[in-house]
Structure formats: structure tokens, C-alpha cells
Image 1 (cartoon, rainbow, N blue to C red):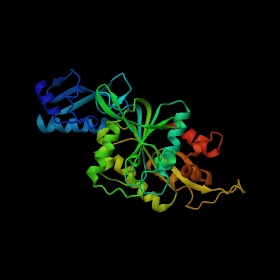
Image 2: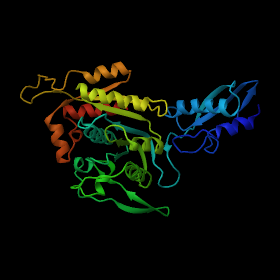
Image 3: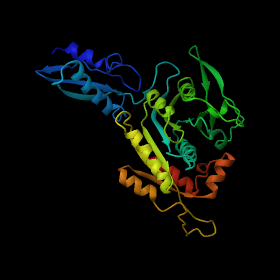
Image 4: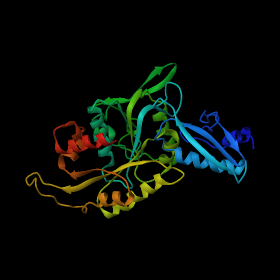
Length: 345
């Protein structure tokens, strides 16, 4: 064997974050060593917790066995660039965020968007630069939750390129397909159209440099999820569920999808929403309307952190409907929960 064989084999492996092969993307370090059927080299990743690291290493090992020799033994080392910014593309439209986190639920109606909105505001109140993408094509709710339904994004010229300027409210930069469609009409798009629209809101927007970029995913699993995974370098996923057994079944499917070896994204944790109901006139009482600690049990079973349990509180619902999420009321017990979750991610 000789080094060029190794290099040519690794041209067959693409890094999902950029779509480029390892050689073209400059991820192969110039330290190839060969001894008999053993080969060692280093791969350079954008960050030490890169979600694609394991899958790329596995693909590299498979490529060497396929294109060089089936008896080869590879010792692949990892290195990381110093800059802790993830960039899906180059140029002024490139999304630059230190943490890109998807908020996911297996089914609708569990409060995923409410969690995403309040978590974004809680992070912004800590002084972080926060972006929020409403990727729920068929049920965009962020314009209403942020009280910006009448706003329309405008275009700006940045270094000769026309980009979309996100709407900013409560210290959060936000885009949603809801800004571009008639809110009284259903969005009837095929998977490809929806995926392309979401990709454009990421790549053709003037997000600037962010500390956190949160993505409110559609419920379930779809083409949009795969598009996002291939378009940006996700730090990880937060799964939202209620304690109800029906919701837990779908939450489990979501976790397994992201843990699939072809996707292999870190699950940052699980949030159990609507954990119990406490009436205002009986603040010491807890009524477990949707079951007791089902999300907590699922998190323990799957070996993922339980980031928080959020009670079923009327003021949380009212805040979302009125466009003033509860996280704005910093002294409110529910706001403190979102603030604490923000410290965990």
C-alpha cells in the first residue's frame, strides 16, 4: 500500500456538514503512516463534539476496506480546529453559531414550539446572541408567539449578495415560513418544496454571528429533518414530550431516528411538558392529568438527561397566545424552569 491509495479511498467519504469529501474539504491531515496492513492518519473536525464524527470515522474505515484492501486495519485519530464556530457554507450568508440545537417532538400538541420560544427568550435574557428558525412548515406558530404576525422580513445587501433580514423580538432573531404565506390558508407543499424553503431560510438569511441557533422542527420524521441534518452541523437535539404513554411512544421513535447510525446526532436531553397541573387556588396540589413522570422514566431508560419538567400552567398558554411568552416574566416559577434549562445546554 502507498499513501495515494488511502487518499483516493477517502475521496469516497463525504462530510455531511458540507457535502464535500474528506480530501476536498481539507479534513485529512498530512500524517498518513503505513505498516503492512495497518494504516494510521488523522481527520480534522470543526469541533470536539462534532455530531458526524462517529459516522465519518466508520465510513472512512469502510472505504479503506472497499477501495484499498479488505484486510486493512485503520487507526484513525481526530483533531479539531481552534475556532468553535460551525459554518454550513462560506460567504456572508453562512450561518455562524456556536451551538445549533434542534427542538423535536414525536407528535404534535406536546408544546414543542412553546418550549422553543421560551428557551430562546431565556437564553437571550442571559445575554446570548440567539437565532430561532420556525421550521414547522405546516403549522408555523412563532410569529404569533412573538407577537410579530404583521411583520414582514425585508432584504439586505451584504457583500454583494441579497439576504433576508430576520425579524428581531425580545432579543431573538427569528424567521418563519409564516411570514411568507397567508396565515388563513393551509400550506400544501410536497417534501422537496418544504425542504428547499427551510434551507433558504438558513442559508440566505443575515443571521450574523450567534451563540445559539434553535430550530423548531416539525413533529414526527420527514424530509425536512434530513435536509436540516445535511445543511447544518447540529450540536444536538432536544426532545419534548408529555408524560402520556401515546406521546412517549413517538418520543422514543424520535430519539431512535437521531441515534440511527446514518444520522448519529447527540441527544442533549428530554423535556417533559405538562408534567402536572396545579390550580392557582391550591398551589401545593399536583394533579397528574397526563400520567406521572413518564418522560422522566423514558429519559432514564434511554440514558439521556432529563432537562426539566414543566407543569401545565394557564399563564404559559396565555403567554404564547398573547405573544408574550412566560420566560419574559423572570420571577415567574415557570420562567425559572426555562432559565435553568438554558444553563444545561
